[in-house]
Picture 1: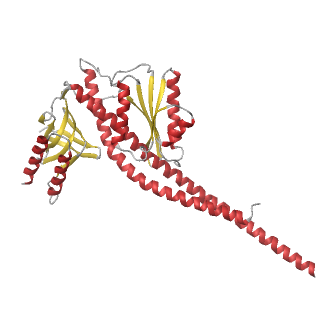
Picture 2: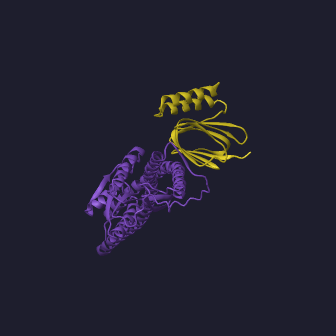
Picture 3: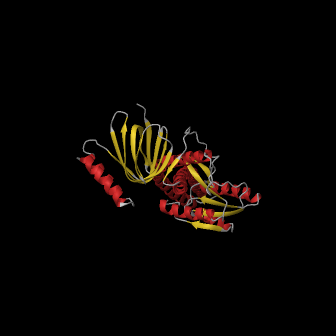
Length: 126
Length: 293
């Protein structure tokens, strides 16, 4: 199966860089999914979650507080102000979930978007 | 011939200077490490955002409408040029600031010879002092920003510049700063930030499909370009800070070595003078004894 490169960059550095099979981004006008070979697109990103499935079927979830995404056929670049990777490694999940929630809550964005993202995070926990 | 006491005093003062310069070197190397980290981390972001603007502008240029945005209108012979000069707030960093000021001078005379008016926007105490001495008018005089770069302040500043560009008060904006290459090398960097030149953005993207934008084109493009400008300004500041510490570390290292060298030669001179004094005294005593016989 073909893959698409996903890059998430913040002013603090590169948060994620890798090949994924599918990615879901939180656009300003709603969530949208991106598959390899997607038409070129530039979008404003709202506070929320970016989720993706990697080559080896691992789920990646990154909480962001707004930014931009540029999609081309073989690459998704996300330029965001702040991002927290929600890892699923032992013991770190609760910590990263807490950080992700804090980040989302601090974002100056619509409450509904944040509430939706927070509830999604909480569902990961279970 | 300087007296023993004079030499001793000199040695003491040079040793004092050496202590100061060594301490400054240590402080700078610690600060350099931090500044370097910040600069490195944001470099990825700066590169990405530039790349993104490049791709978008290349895409727009290809499309039927072309690039019809005030940020992209290219001016063949600008009438008013704004130069943003970034220097440090503190001195004792070798040729760091004078290199930047020299480059600013070159650019200034280049535009002025073409009949353009140059307005200076100056960041950093050192450049402010320099242009005050030259009695040049300055549009902005900002100090305190280059020793502690803050994103918000940089954004405020560049917003003001952008507004004056959009109002048509200026046709071109250039940022000049001395950037960090590695621990011992700095390089003067000149960024033509406004107008954005689509030709300068050489994009190697092979995307063939037409670019979609969401939400509508103008507001997104504007937000993205503003972000790009803010970040370019901010990056110039942190890059300059890292370079400043690098330059200071080097200058202070050289100063410490010179002080050491000086103490060495002064000590030799001191010993010589001491020996001489002893010899003269001995001769005096001996000749005194001789004459008593």
